Image (cartoon, rainbow, N blue to C red):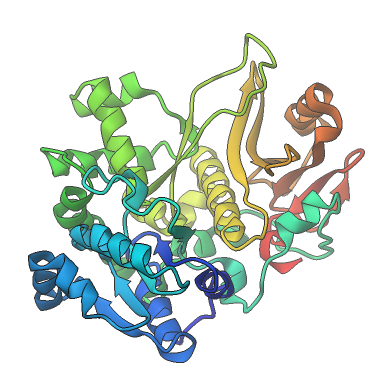
Length: 411
């Protein structure tokens, strides 16, 4: 596969100009190593080392301080979680020399949540995330969808694909570069091996789980419930483990960027508000492979299609947010039978509400959750929209629209 320009690359280079250490984190096989190596060679004039190489890892673990002391002015260290002992040695070096841009480290686990690391570099590192490819990156575009909505504007689409079947193959392919190069059967084999390798190797590196295989079983169970509420007792019962263990395993899966947890958004709006988190598999290609879905199932199974579409929107938006100047926090909201699938919130408190429908038609009643939220928070909600499988952008009230799904990347 030819190299695809990653929209977060500019953000990485910008951070290297100010931070002593930049950590680029994200799931395995998302393209971190490819991007880091390219930046090292073409932009940073940096050395490159991968801790997936056993000889390098052995040297690093045997003498962390000496290993770091022997590195050049700027170094890329790939898969840093494989030798977390290096982080304290990096801290010691950058404390003695405070010039920016000394290290670009990558990791396939969230370093801030690994028990053996406990964020060894507070105040010295900028954290960035590289997710699998977005649809905009594949088309050579830098998406502006969220920026437009926060400006109170609707992306205009006049002839989008109609029907969920038009999006099915794209969603089931997902954004992992290698998986995208494979036909359906071979893609399924890739994801099966991908999950097995993470369970066998990375779960142990990132946690103190005694039975890594139970983490893999939980991930496969979650795939059938992506976009649903996190019912810990039901998950525990189905897996034959206790609820506390389920919560611990969910934390590991999120730490490894395999799932995303959307916590409920609230401002003490009402006693009936649902306060349970939502769970998503972090890539729809992985989701489809875990449940054995194909295009026919997307076309025929309304429940699965709805979960797939919502998972796609939730994960695609988080990927786009990873390079925005203003950070965003993502939530979900439900009160009674009124819900909003995704709430994006700026530090200023401004929010955008989004509903997702795997349908080519939208009716006024479908906006009930967005109307309810606007009534509660007023001008704080700068825009609301339903993303659907229809052809046209349509207005449904003040700063509220039905927007074709294609607008996420092609507006």
